Length: 317
Length: 316
Image (cartoon, rainbow over the protein chains, first blue to last red):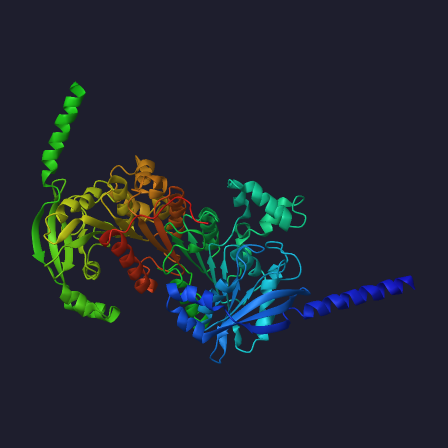
């Protein structure tokens, strides 16, 4: 009898858990959000083309489910009705640093204006979402679960999905690409590939404390936790059906380009399609590189919008 | 003191010998064959305007007392001065020499507003001497600097250098010896000569052994002397380098260039590197893109004198 009850309890837990995951990506709420005029004007003043960008796109704020948690996200898309290829944007930073704010939304609008539905997760954790952010841990699911979110989105053509990440967002994409095999094109700007790198820095103690704070069980399994988050140590696990475009600044003080160069060497040896640009004197996120976005649009155009097949990597005689 | 005196005597002797270095002794107009023109017209929409707005000359100049063949391409409008580019060809001896395709390539660059000069190297077509594949033939490139001073429309305060393949090796060798260049562009440059021994059957015997003096006797020293991966830290740091490499190149291995990038990064060389997936040895899949990158690099650093990038880690 006792056994039976235990079994029943176990079953109900299973059922509860599976129903939870069945809800992965379910949109709980969504509403259009207005970017304040002050932010718009700030952008327009520097880049007049933003007038047209703001006129032709809209942004929605949403709450969606991921592993049963309510997570905040944003979608920017063209106002003109239609089906558009999708891009999952992965933000950088942690907690409030690098959060998707109105300024980030203007950037999402810029991408949307090129003819994409772009979705961005705030990731689980304070201050906007339930759960805790593990900096490359389970919250990677919040990125993966953007796909079922897109499936509910009217203008999204989910046969064509790309990803775009900056800094920590790069780490999120590499982790997601272990699971996702159907991503057509990826662009990574100043992406993290090697967390061990932080120990060579002058502020390494701060990083150590940061990892302790973020990663459950960090002190016990330090090596494992860091390796799991560092694509440099498992390049073979990254999908080879995805056209990768990786770009990095040679004087990035946040993410050392050395690790990225080694990563490219490994990715090349594994015959994965990768374009790599190292920018002379580029800082983190390439903020000082004029026009760094042009090759980005070109990449998404080629492999996402225009369905170009992957480059032939065989040695050509 | 005696030593010093001999040293002086020796160097003044050298000066006498080399007083003629770079002197242009013949200079004749040269035209691309009509049959080739048709090929270019198919590939490059602006072929006609390139050909009508630039001139091509075949020259002979002196280098280490040898008569060396070369080409000059420049804008037809000779009412102003233009920045200069030295182009380093690939191949060895007659192979990969400046045939009509390369000649037109020089004109394509001249069309951007540059005086472009290129050497066949010693041992190449119409040149005297013997090609040492990155040995004494480096002088044939360096001696184009005094040649440029004899061209009325050349502004020799602004010079860039450019090379593909073996011409990349030549560019590195020159960047080790002079700080004259405001910028360099290398496509699929040979950076580690050992890799062709490993990857290209027969290459060592047919090229290295035939070109490099006493090759088998001094093999390691001679190969390393020519391979920038061994001395990436001694390239001129005031010459920003744009390096482009295709991942499907069979002549120059992508590995050696990725290794060079690794070393140049550590050496804080001002460097932009572009790795093209599926690009072949000439990056022919990406010509529009590589042309634009190259023009931008030269326009910024050679023509307009843009300041060098800050190569210390910075930013937030």
